[in-house]
Image (tube, rainbow, N blue to C red; front, side, top):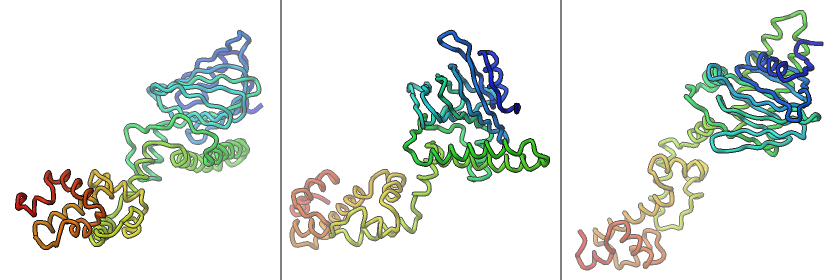
Length: 325
């Protein structure tokens, strides 16, 4: 039998074997009904990323060691199986086809039935940081927050699981060959591909930040949006029209205005309209207040007066009586 394919009996033997093949995780094994624990396992080290295909009849409590923190992915590949974890104040339950994502230094508890199997992937924090630096050109943050549970309905989850299994099988098939360097080269490439894929596939704070950064508009696009709004104050403008003029998505437009102006594009447009109305009123070049309202895009004079008062603290009619200014 290959040293990476094992059949084990007893809690101590299982715990020792799991720790030997993991990347810094402490295990406690138990069998609730008192029958000796059993486990069948296939292990593979992918250049520092530990992959274990496990089956058996036991319960395991696993905790990442502080001196060697890891991110652990637990794919439920076949049920019945119950996996739970406490992440902050949340109790997370995963079923067949789901993936439990356990951040560094968090614990997890898995109960495996005899016909249940799971795929456990331990990614050391140092490898996450290395891949972020080399492939994403990102300074690794002090902490990455992960969504604790990814459901099987997410199509990319199955692709990630398939990639890990294929890497596991490929490296197992050649590791006893007569060209040792081939295994090392493939392991390194698979490792980077797996870690890059999980960063892009599994919801996490750093990719969310990158996505938002990519949505931020350039100064030229912002100017196009503002110029369009300013030139069409009298027209019934929508956010889709502004985004089209800027050459971006409504989501990107909304995000940029939130970041740069602390408001939404449509609220900013209303402020532009009211400021244009005040300037027109101060100039005295208008026939009546209804004309002023229409010229800046307000179809209802009453709503215009209310919005004007909330913005400036007095009614537009004050200009007619010479009170404002």
